[in-house]
Amino acid sequence: MKRIALFIVAICLLTVAGCGGQTVPVVQNEEADGQGRGISALVCEGTNDTILIYLTMPYDGSDPDTLNVLKASKNHCVFGQPNVGDNVIVVRSELDSTVADVVIVTEDLMGRWGYEAFPTLRLQAGMPADTSLLPDTIKQLLQVAREYSIDFKKDHSMLAFGGGRRTMAEESPVEYPAMKRYTEWRIVDDRLLLYVSAVDSTGETNIVGVDTARLVTLLSDTLVLDINGEKQGFGKK
Image 1 (tube, rainbow, N blue to C red):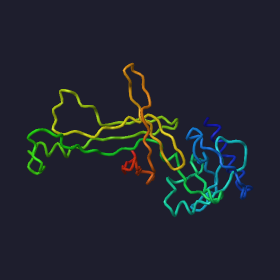
Image 2: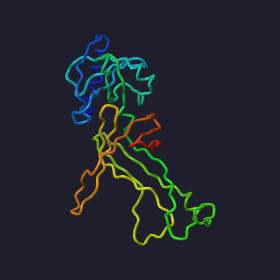
Image 3: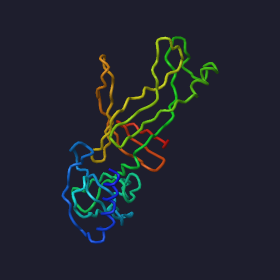
């Protein structure tokens, strides 16, 4: 696979000078199991802040194509920094097939992203409503953060870490938010689908739900997602 990828990058470098305004038919996004308007692509030499030069993937032997990304950039809809050889998802404009509405650099999404979660007070009889009246030991517990993280893999698998499970013997006056066990991810157009899994009574792992996330920010060290209407920031680990 590595040799094939290098060969395709070489094709980009050799043929980009001879491609001009070619129109590639809109294809369904393989990233999203055939759904949506996204194009899976590989970034080619000549890409800059105004245009994206790319090969559609899987590679079919055709020359690179060009899309104008200025509108997407102005609308803050270019997520990540496209570099030669990067895998990207591109959503063409429905009004102008030479213009991109959204560009997502999936290469920049890969890896482990983390954030700190703080506990809340567990409701117990006799607890004062005013947290300033709590004993110092409980106030200190409320300031102890736990690290949560999600890890995006290139094969579309995913790992989630953090949260922990409460046991019957646990008597802590604080509790941490639950962490959903994401095990897969997909991209449909500009949406990121996060698949939630659970282990059933037989020990089998099954998908039990899907969270829809919208990319807000994707930089080399910062990821912000709007998951089901709630924004969550992450730092690269």
